[in-house]
Amino acid sequence: MQEIKFYSGEDLPLELHKVRIVQKLFLVPIERRLEALYEGGFNTFRLSTKDVFLDMLTDSGTNAMSDNQLAAMMQADDAYAGSQSFERLQKAVKDVLGKEYLLPVHQGRAAESLISIAYVKKGSLVPMNYHFTTALAHITQNGGKIAELLYDEAYVINSDHPFKGNMNIEKLEETIKSHGATNIPFIRMEASTNLIGGQPFSVQNLRDVRAMADKYGIRLVLDCSLLGENAYLVMKREEEFKNSSMEIIMKEMTALADLCYFSARKISSSRGGGMCTDKMEIFRELEALVPLYEGFLTYGGISIREIEAMAVGLYETQDESMICQSPNFIKYLVGALDKKGIPVIKPAGVLGAHVDAMQVCAHIPQTEYPAGALAAALFLISGVRGMERGSISNQRDEYGNETYADMELLRLAVPRRVFTLSQIKYVEDRLHWLYDNRKLIGGLRFVYEPPVLRFFMGGLEPTSDWPQKLMAKFKKDFGESL
Ligand code: F0G
Picture 1 (spheres, rainbow, N blue to C red):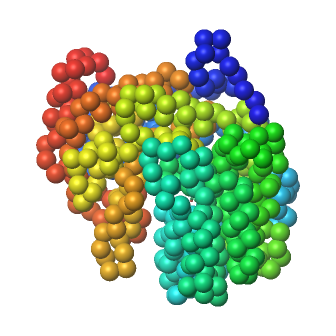
Picture 2 (picture 1 turned 60 degrees about the vertical axis):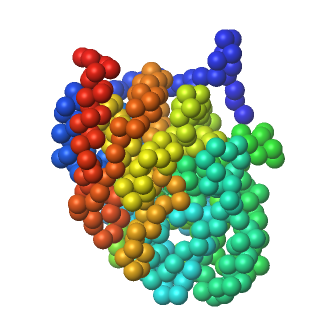
């Protein structure tokens, strides 16, 4: 494990890279930001980056790419079939994830779709540590249901539990017994459990899940989209692995799964996705679906240039000096917000800092989407674009009723190697002001609600003129400042 201490004693994340290509950002006046919110239905997904200053929507496809990734893209072997670029990717998957057979898909949710088409039917139940939006949508589209089996500690905002993403093994066995192993096509484990604040599971927990899968003869599927960061936190937090390399930890985890899939937009700082396995029968069950839905088996709907970037990016996840960057910046931001009394998920996880909108906006009922309101309010007063991870991101139940989320979070993603420390300090500063003025934030209601994955394109409106009042207070306090 690498560590860099400051003489001053300050605990600061240090950038272990230098910036050689930059993109200009725009911090537009608050009046324009207010207009942009109305134009985008108070949904941060629908904002244009022309109006966004710091884009903390996601790390998906927005991690900084390395010089070696860009260089590799120039040697792409564009062939419909049998591309050498794909062979390089196969080798990278074997070297980094330890799996022999690779099926490429255009992004992570395409793997979720194909896995669900292949294995899920009416009456199926998929136990998982926690759902991810697109994984759940594909399972339900194919007639299945899910069971979320975290320990209670996972839902505690202010915690020091190192592995809140662990699956509750006792509940897993109960679920298998009560539902019947034959109705469980697979168990899904998600590395760095996204929707509860990017919280990791331990290798020991994954071993326990594996033992249960073996006992009842059920497949184990591992969502590896955030595997690198989960492995990094295993190195930091799990005694057995404190002297292990990233390479060893990642392989230890993937070796426990029958089938791994990933969003390359996340794991390898590129675009694309994939599914990989050592089992020929699983490979065969999924193989025919790839050309049907994605593209030929040696590109799977991904540009060949991105396949080259993916191969190099996969190797780079083994580099501790790269993989530590996002979690260390998040740790800094979470620590800074916590010191100011702003409720934020602890311990710091991966992907981003997660502000607890249920507490910040305690005056807004869940029916008026406190996390969506907080995301809109933060954008208004700062140009920082976060993402709602609460009830708007939930789907309605089979009878069309709202299902309120366990947690109402504003996620502020910190993509790998994108932001500087002073930008992170700006986020901290504006959130501090917003927290002090939180009573001015009001609720939202839907005016347009798509039937599936409504959070992406849904349109909302404020329930009162609170955005105008918040803007007036901002102008009073900040004067001419942007
Ligand atoms: N699994 C996890 C854990 C994810 O975080 C994502 C995407 C996917 C699967 C789906 O992959 O986007 O390539 O289709 N997460 C993004 C996010 C969208 O912002 O958290 P995809």
